[in-house]
Image (tube, rainbow, N blue to C red; front, side):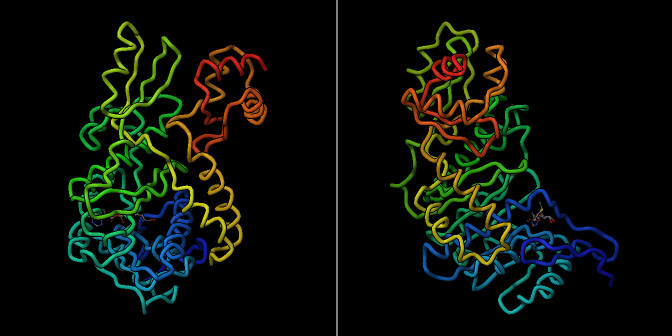
Length: 378
Ligand SMILES: C[S@@+](CC[C@H](N)C(=O)[O-])C[C@H]1O[C@@H](n2cnc3c(N)ncnc32)[C@H](O)[C@@H]1O
């Protein structure tokens, strides 16, 4: 048996191949794992207790291993992958990182694994290739009451509205390919998780939805009961190019909203999707306030501080953003500095922040025409 390639990520040392065969490992997903560490830590802080976690599609096990080493709040970690090679690599990685005592490794289908460990797990991480939709029902129905589900989606073409039919098939939604399509993608995934929970008489309490390095990630608490189902946070986005207007509405408001655009030739509709706040402000604040208690490496802590601060700022804004490039092109002007535009909007009384979705994106409560007027007046 030869280990061919070992690398470091955060506090973990990870073999990514064995006997000449590579197991899936994408360095681009590192920030999503670092954020995962922060949310396991956040949950430990929230409960003031240790957690049982499960990395159900583990590949090398890097995600779960980092959660153990860097959050300081894991009492037991399940690792699972159906691949024989991954199983062997994970076993080696668990040993190399000195976490045998609290780890349990299995090689089975992820859905079967979750059902076999029903109500045993506080934090389930579902990190598949492409879409997580085949795993949502098992995850939301088997996690402990008040437990956390973390899910990844990387099937951006359907979620961002490039292909329509797969979006309907996998998420029962329609997306649109606009400058803010990655936010639409995150919001469709949150809605799908909420729907899956609803099917099992549970509901979601969203912690965060974000898009980083081509990875969509959603973290939500899953709670027993139907009263808390977030009906008012599920709806549609209406994008009217004739009126230069973007609006959101609840499911039951769609008819009235469309009737205002009955003669419009360029009306786009996305949804159903999540129209509520994108992050839980107090949860993110608590992680930020305690960021130095994380056992992560310093550079990751500094990065987490920056990204979580942006999450916190952008929490309470409409479910879309405006893009400076796109808007400047529309006006035929050169692209001004983001800070200048933010200041200009604030000076006329609007709330306004940058967004993690795009370096040239702005979230504001100003409508799109007002935004264009302010931009054109600079
Ligand atoms: C995208 S990789 C996981 C990446 C890993 N979590 C990380 O952060 O590097 C997906 C893994 O899921 C495994 N897999 C795919 N379908 C599965 C299933 N139905 N049950 C269990 N494992 C599965 C694959 O073998 C692969 O190792």
